Length: 61
Image: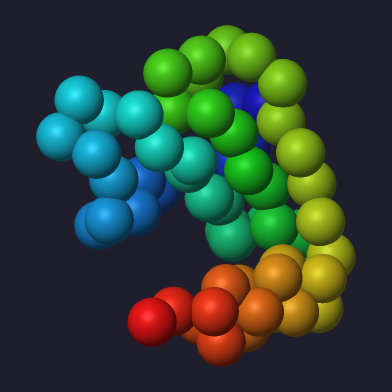
């Protein structure tokens, strides 16, 4: 899916293992494993991604 422009989180591990996120396509958030750039891509609606990340922030110590 070359149209997605993936970015790695600033929280990624030093060895590069992280989830990458692309938000450059309207109404779509795409996720992939940074160690497998040619591997599967999961796409979500922005509302679903927002709910997921909001839940993660609530769980932070």
